[in-house]
Amino acid sequence: MSSSSNDGNSGIGKKELEHLAQLSRIELDPNEEAKLIKDLGAILDHFKELQALDTANVAPMTGGTDLVNVFRADGEENGGPESTNRGAGVDAFPESKDGYNKVPPVFE
Amino acid sequence: MEPLHDLTIKKFHEGLLNKEFSALEVNQTYFRRIKEHDKEIGAYLSLAEESAVAAASAVDVAVAEGENVGALAGVPLAIKDCILIKDLPATCGSKILESYVASYDATVIQKLRGERAVFLGKTNMDEFAMGSSTENSAFHITRNPHDHSRVPGGSSGGSAAAVTAQFAMAALGSDTGGSVRQPAGLCGIVGFKPTYGAVSRSGLTAMASSLDQISPFGKTVDDTAILFKAIAGSDPLDATSADGADYSSITEPAPLDKTKKLTIGLPEEYFIDGLDKAVSDGVQNAIDKLKSLGFNFKKISLPHTKYALSCYYIVMPAEVSSNLARFDGIRYARIANAKAEGEKLSELYLRQRGAGFGAEAKRRIILGAFVLSSGYYDAYYDKAQRTRTLIRQDFDRAFKDVDVILTPVTPTPAFKIGEKTSDPLSMYLADIFTIPASLAGVPAISIPTKPSSALAPGELPIGFQLIGKKWHEADILSIGHYYEKLN
Image 1: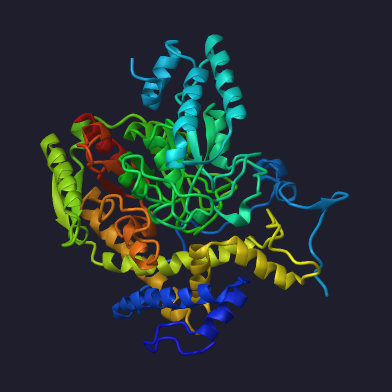
Image 2: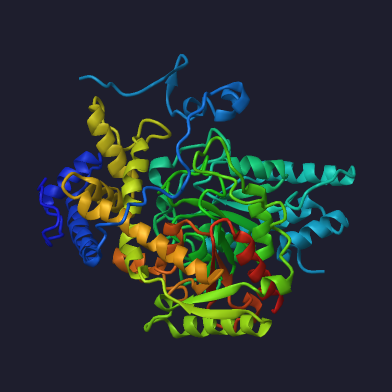
């Protein structure tokens, strides 16, 4: 991927799109690619308006909340494991065998 | 007496306690209506009749035994498909979750169960809540009950249409950049997005975590307040939830003479040339009515409003690309025909996600990956986060001067089905008036300028938006209450 970031040329080329699609683990057909290149070009063009804005001395807003992170133990006083939907991921797993979750082979 | 499907939550509750009807009778009326008419609208993706009948019957037993039941007992609700109800499908309008069944209840669902509310079914939505028209659902579109050739708005279009067509007494949706307020505006009902953090997001399938809020739809402002009171509150399962205000009396509007002391700001950036005439006339009419009640208005400026759309369409897809990574075709559900014998894991991901996600989801995942990628992060993602600070500061500054801000909800009334599907940017513009409050995390409510019963033949509903200070839901709900009483 090109390292230039703010050169005014805001489109995404075919090669770059394929790289992004690969990183995003999404298979695209040629029609989808062509449409995406066109749409993303128009969207990124619209984003150019932000370049006019001076944000040098503005702190980024990094979330939706002003709360700060706190740590606590997963103890009974917090409802214990029963309050955390424990096991819900296993229950929802689409394939299982002998009590194990079945996944496709990971190693070739 | 009004027909059973016409009742508000308030009137239903009174009638239930006075034994004018049973909860079961009312819920069955809704199922009858859905079965007869929802093929024309497409509000629901799945129904839960068996569990609904059991829940409604249990309420009737409780009432007969003289038990004290709350305001939501027996109330038939529609729930957006991205909010998990244990043992019911939760497709999020996506093929990739077509066979997924929720294995636990969202916190809001647990709370509503505690109130003995009834869940009629799961409603249609733009895939993973990405869209403004409900045309991005992988399963079918939803039509605006006022005009079947038009969209209901989105992404919570199914829930909005369900309440509008009287297929549910009230509903839950989720609002990330306007996905409850915008369809409420286009359908002529009330949609109320609380302060970010006021309602737990646990069990809401995440789209953009710093923006998503579960939000109620109702026929009246008071009904949305009843639902909000039931679902609000901090939750250990959502670290961004908080108890920012005491909502114990949120369903009782403040007295009018006290409410009238709230100053309402009109931001010049929202009353622009090119605003549809029906919208500007409708909103002006709402302003005049509030003036006649004795409210004071003040012109204000939110100078960074015009950057909100760009800011949002960088921050949100960035979060989408990360949140939707969990849909890998291994957990949750698998698409059978997107599978090859002996394929490698990497191929499985590519195929499942390629076949499972629709065009808009793909666009946003890839756009999000782009704005977060090395070399572009500063120009896009970091820039957008700083812009978000400026937009939030606009509100902070304005709220030193006024208590509440009034704006249009949408630039136009409901648009035609298919009108904006080929041009994503034109679709994104449908949310320009709802996005800024989402970025700032402040509460906002969409209220019909006039009741549906007062619409002329062919006239489309228009909404206005009241935006409040963080944790000051009471202000906008009280003003909304008195506005509706004028009707």
